[in-house]
Length: 418
View 1 (cartoon, helix red, strand yellow):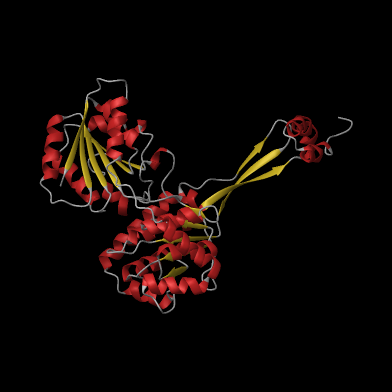
View 2 (cartoon, rainbow, N blue to C red; view 1 turned 120 degrees about the horizontal axis):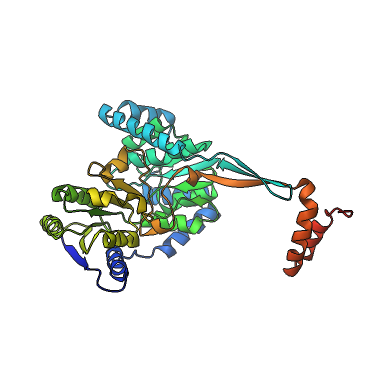
């Protein structure tokens, strides 16, 4: 495996070297090929021609000519045939993800304001949501758990799963999680079908979950017509470690993340030269793969944290006493794993945190999948006797904006004797 080496010695302008190293790490993620034109054609076709276009694309891309919706009997059969050890693991994951997800629910909040009006912030689930589960070489039942269980915890009435290939372990996971519907289709055409609806596929309010470049582009194009959780790009992990950490432990976690394949970036940032050299040598001895690897030697842990913050990793591991002490100062990471026992792999399956996380540095401004992805807030306003005071305050503002009818709407509610 080719290993890039960077050094941050802290000699230059404060933070400049750390920012440069973070940018260099992010540049290891290859630029995506544009599929915008192809996806636009597919989305427009499904939106305008509906069921006919969907069936054509499903046959062409998914190889499915029969019913698109998976019957409950098929789900039950898949669950009955599931390896007991896999089922037990999924049940642990379901219980833990549900517990953590429910902790993120917010209560309605009522605010009484000085003029006498009230504004109640209601926190409401969407009615119907779709969870996209990637197809490809391997099935990902854990993605079913992360999406369906979280949507259920959010209070979504109907949760449906998009399962290209309809692999038996995916169907079994859908049965365990209680998905209301499972559809054997994938790709941009499936995203369009859920966004706009067809004769057989009812539209949804939110589409969540990772997928191919075509799926992500389709989500981008339909956003605004339907809610989306975000855009999932290549995965990454950054380990910030001190010299008291076993190099082999770091290597194991980096190689585990490298299994995600093309475009994945795995990096160690440390202030310890022997650890940096040991990890780099061990990674270099691995066969070349699709992932990019890097080792950054920082002048100290402060510079190391600056590199991590600038990179804004999907997964951040803090290992070693000095690094672990920085946990409360992290501001830009999809999920933080603290301590030598807290391998990122636990978060992918059974820790209870959600593994659908912001990639490509998006942790600077967005969050991973949670109940918030399936809920929205709505204000309920009661003005009452406050109308007089609020009109006196609001009318001049409306008139300054040139909205005379807005001004009149408030003015007619003033108390003439006030």
